[in-house]
Length: 225
Length: 105
Image (cartoon, rainbow over all chains, first blue to last red):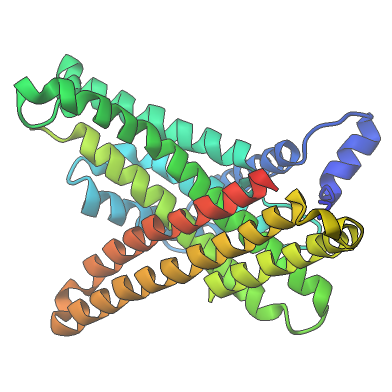
């Protein structure tokens, strides 16, 4: 099935006579939108009369913070910036695909793979910073003489993590987008509504899964043996 | 539900691809099945197997989580998080199949 570019990409490519890929334009658009929303929401913060945007962002921060406390522990709030960024970026990227004429940037394997690699680098970085050279012990297994057996297995299992994160997000969002498209083509009235609702549900659940797994990986990397 | 939708989607895609493939086959039927037809068949069957068994596994996980939170409602929040993570892991197996189909088609 031939995929058409989203409207914004057609506009950009038409005006500038370029061939910028669709996912790039959409991801840049999502980034700009989230930056503008964040700036607009933090312009006027107030305790007595919080605005709508402030309340929404506080809800996001509260949910992410609660998960951080539950999974990583008492120093979990330290990872709020990176996990919060993942949450906002992925949620907006997933949801924007539900608007007709837009393509979800997370429906492209390149975007999801780069997000997953960011998560991979992050948890290894925090793990190495927390334990120094002792971080290598995470790869050695429980008994030191058996380390030569455990090391390759652990390395492969750690390398499989970003791959599975990327393919899970990509497959869900891409598949969901395709299902919505197919049903919209078949019956362009009323029938696609349940699939759009399903799409909203999937967008939230996949964001949750991505940040939960990132948190679990970070928690596993920074814990002390 | 999502698995069902995914199966229907892939089936629909396969049917779209299959029509020209079968039309070509008409001429080349004497020479046996073409490569395209086999690929389409394999794609459909692999997605069907993946969806079916993934659905069974997810059902098992969900029923265990429901039983657990019915016995001990205090644990319901924790169980829900664990269930969602487990479902994500199970589901990614079916998604690997889908990705392989899209790569190979």
